[in-house]
Every structure is written in C-alpha cells, then in structure tokens.
Amino acid sequence: MHYLIKGIQLFLLAVLMSSCAVIGINVKRKTPQKPGKYPEFTLEDTLHGKLTPLRSAYDVTFYDLNIDLDIENKSIRGTVELCFNAGRRMDTLQIDLYENLKINKIVFQEQELKFFRKYKAVFLLFNDGIQPGKNYVITVYYEGKPVIAPKPPWEGGFVWKKDRDRKPWIGVACELAGASLWWPLKDHISDEPDSMRLSVTVPAGLFCVSNGMLQNRTVRDDRETFTWKTNYPINSYNVTLYVGNFRHFQLPCPTGDTVYPLDFYVLPHHLEKARTHFQQAVDIIQFYESAFGAYPWWQEGYKLVESPYAGMEHQTAIAYGDDYKNMPGQDFDYIILHETAHEWWGNSVSAGDYAEIWLHEGFATYSEALYIEHTKGYQAYLNYLSFYSIFIKNKRPMVGPSGVNFWDYKDTDVYMKGALTLHTLRNTIDNDSVFFDIIKTFYDRHKYAMVTTQDFIQIVNEKTGADLNWFFNQYLYSRVCPQMEWVFKSNPATGDNEFWYKWNNVESDLRIPVVVKSGSSVYTLYPEKKIRILNLRKENTLTLNTKNAYISLKNNKSL
Image 1: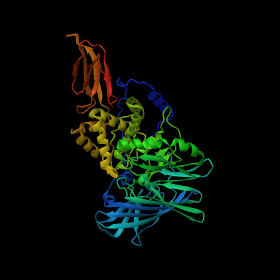
Image 2: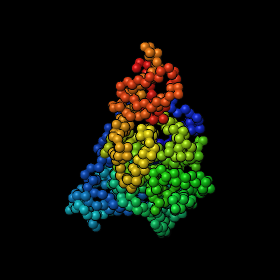
Image 3: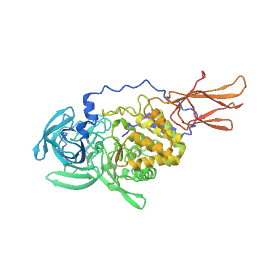
Image 4: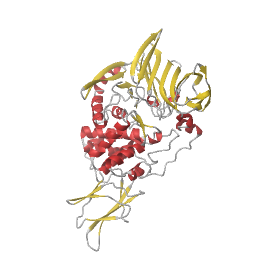
C-alpha cells in the first residue's frame, strides 16, 4: 500500500525523470524537523497490537470463513471456523472483532462457549481449559454492518459502490484498521494461518474474486456462492474480496522453462484497454524474479482486480483502481509496479509488527527504483530516488513503537526514507555483487515467514563480514538525517586550498563514502565526527558527489 503521489508531485517526477539532473552536486534535503510525538496509546491500542499471553498461547493453522453479503443494506452475516494449536494450557484466549459487529454465538466442542468483550477484543472462556500440543476448532457466528472505509485503502473498511452500469462494485481493504473490522480472528499480523478458505455469497449475476484459487461455484435460488482457497500462509489484512460485474482474461508470463497465466478481472467497459495496459505486468514480474527470486505464489497465480479504490497488495489478488494510466512521461503504471513488489516484500516476507513496516514499504519502494534502473539506467534510478528524498520528513525513527498496532500512513518515511536507506546501504557496501546477494538471501531465507529488522541486519553483517549496526542505528532507530558539514577555503600560511569536513547529527562515525572531485583529482572520503582536512594544493574547483546517499550537506564557513 502506498500514500499515492498525485497532481503536481507526478508532474515534478516526470520532469525530474526526463531531465539530465547533475547527481552529486549537493541536493538540498529537508532539515530534520522537531521530533514527532506518538499518540497517547490506550488499552484499546494494546489489546489490538500486543502479542499478549492470551494470544501467544495459541497458533492459528486455518480459517474457514463464510459470509453472505446483503448489498442493499450494506451488511454481512457469517461464520468462521478458527482452527488452532495450543502452545500451553490456558482457560482464556483472545480473538478480535469490531464492536459494531454482533456475535450471535461461539461454539466449541458442540457447546456454546462463554465470552466477554472489551473494545475489539473478545475473550473466550474454556471451562476445562485447552491443553498444550492439541488442535482445536471454534466456530463464531456473527452479523452486522462492517465499517465503511472513509479513505480506502489507507483508512480501511468496506467499499460499497456502483459501476458505470449501476451494478454493485464491492471491495474491502483493512491493513491498518485490521481484518477484525469484517470477520472474527486472531487479529495480529504475526500469526498467519497456514492456509485459508473464503466463501462469499452474492446476488446471482455478480462475480466474486478473492485470494488463492477458485475452488467452487454453487447457485441456489437467486444467490451464488464463490469459494476461494489459499494453501499458503497469508497475512490477515491481505484477505479480501471483490464483487462486481467482472470480465476475465489472461496473459502469458514466460519465466524459466514455464509459461504461467496471469489473470485479470476488470469492468466490461475497460476490457480492451486493460488487455493492452496490463501487459506491463509481465515485464515487472520477470524483473522482480531476476532481482529477488521466483514469484512466490505461482501455484495459485497472479491476479489484478479492478477495485473501487486506488490499490492494495492483497496476496495473489492485487487491487487495481488507477484509471489505466501510466505515470506522466513514463512507461509504467505506479500501482502495478509498487503493489506487485509487495508479493515479495510484505506478503511473502512479512513483518510481525507495524513497528517494522518499513520492511514492507521501504523494500517495495526501493523495488520501484530498481525497476527504473533496469529499464532506464542508473542515472534514472538516482533521479527517481532524488525525487523521493524530497518527501522525507524525519519526524520519527523508521522503526516505531511495538505492541500498539501503530503506523501513521501519512508519515511516508517508511516508504521514501526506507528506499533511500537501502540505496545508502548499497553505496556504503560499495559492492553490488554483495549488496544484491544480501537482498536475494534475505528473501530466500525468510520467504513465507515472519521477519524482523534484526534478521535483515544479521544477513548484512554476515555477507559483508563487518558490523554495520552503526548504519542501522542511524537510519532506522534515529530520526535525524546525518549531516556532513564542510568548507572550502585557503590556508593563509601555505596558500593551499583545503577541504574541511566532519559529521554532524550522528552518534558515531559513519563509514559512508563521499566523493570529492577537484580539478583532475578524485578523492573518496569517509567523514568522522572530528574535523578532517583534505589538502587540494592550488586547485580552486570543487564538486561533491554523495551518489544520492541519504545525507545532508551543509557549507559551514565557521568550521
């Protein structure tokens, strides 16, 4: 998911990408702002975001969700079988469901289970307790009107729309709000079920698309039920549905020795346009496979589904609502490029807490830049990242508070600064073979699994043979942008020109290279916290080149 760049920002990007901007002469960065305050977290935040003993005591293995949509009244009625394995003996467990949805009953071993509710949390009371190592099933019956999304996909909920022909067009996006806004589950992103089935009943004549593969369609009276199933682990916010008057087509995607079909579901009046526009998905997937590893869901396919909101990376069923337009002056559609990257970063390699959402969004945003490098060259890659650096705010550290389900989507640093952090790491390592081995290893080692920032740091240190914790402490756990202060001046005693430089805003020396060109000489410098001096003799020209590393340059004549 991305806080989309629109209007004048898109225009500026088109200008920047088509220009011959000089990279390396100091690009002005926004100076660090005053520290951004986190909201005052409440018990409700903790109940939603913390992996408490009432949640960690069990591991969900399978969900079987069945819902019936009442489109006219914008309501749902459903049941969910929640299958889990007990990790220890407990007599109370927590699941989650928004307060506005009514629980009619919860059944366990053919008996109704007692429960009580606090905010979105639902506490289940087991008379005889649950025993470690055993598998259990509870069935929750519920109904109500789910939250309507005020600003999908960023402020989530259901979206009830009509298409151009006045037929229903329905979707749901819930990354930040949580899947418990429309179905009962253990609503913590650290616990992905091993597999899941979703059955959706809608008026006959409409089609429902969801994650995984379509298993069955059954018609009864004037209603049709679509049953989809994924046999892979899936993030709860990635579970979704799309209902509409869709037309379906496929495009071939050659990869290795196999040609896989890509599936597209669009509204009828967009069918011909979509056949041409969506062809770019083939090249995008092929590039990401070469950069990161095989597309993770070939056994269940790749789907783009026209949606009544901009875009969202729902696993194997990406929401597409971007008007079938490429970015101005470019030959790619931003939504396809960014959301497809999430099939690797976020859907396959998944963070266990929103505190580390940069592992999803920073990597997906950096993937965009790598695609630019692949299609237009290194200079265009640098230009792209330079544009993104304009929007970095430095209000908070990129790794945020854990256990409170917090991420402010309006703070785009996890996207832009996340991408620039990876680029700066690439500069710092200064060996593309090692850097891209790190990226591929990180993906291969942690695909279909939960991951932490420390997992990534461990691989970086392993592959470089160095301790780069100083780098991550600066870029992930501190909010400030490192600043290199410098001055170019003449030494009155010798008459030589000198370049004075040092780090500011850092806690330790950063081994980040800065290239200085003076006359015909080129120097690679590594600033320190103390002033260093480079004697340039009689040269009187100076060019600084950071290769667009995310550092600030300040000409400080008082050095």
